[in-house]
Image (cartoon, rainbow, N blue to C red; front, side):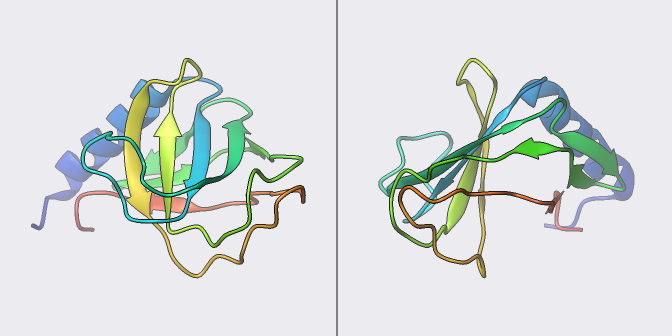
Length: 120
């Protein structure tokens, strides 16, 4: 469903606002659950934003600085990520592809990324 740029920008800004400072990004394998439901996959890694989730321009969120997970939780290839507040309140889930496999016990770093909202 196409959405105009003003609406996409407002949606992106609301995600950043809802996530707040020190939001968490959890990487999972498996199918994306329905609207904040319990993930059926395995939690592979847990990263934390160093400040805000990022900045938004034209409905595209560019991630801010991320503090990596020094020790991955489990082996697997991420298929979606979950954004949570610092208090573990669900904000959003997004599918991902093309990331390398995570190795349990190995460091996991997110060095950048974007989230495009509203069918941009």
